[in-house]
Image (cartoon, rainbow, N blue to C red; front, side, top):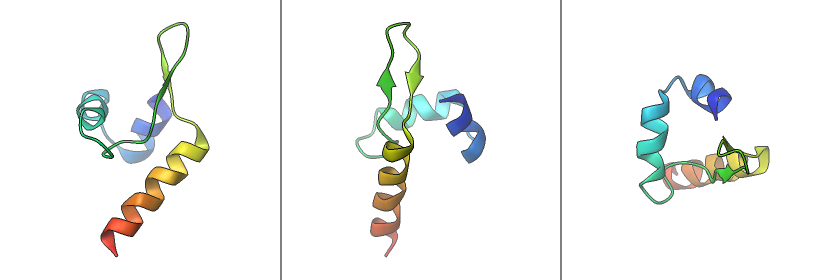
Amino acid sequence: MAEFCAMLRISKDTFYKWRQIPGAAPVAHKLPNGSLRISGADYNAWLQTLRSEAA
């Protein structure tokens, strides 16, 4: 998640706000230690939905 926020130049707070809006953020998987991870496939799928909406 930290890498995702850094790539998009957003804060963690912004990411958590996006997660509250359906489709506004990629799917994040919660690990047993409580941290969130975004898989490359989920990130790419999310980007595709953004591209589709923009077209």
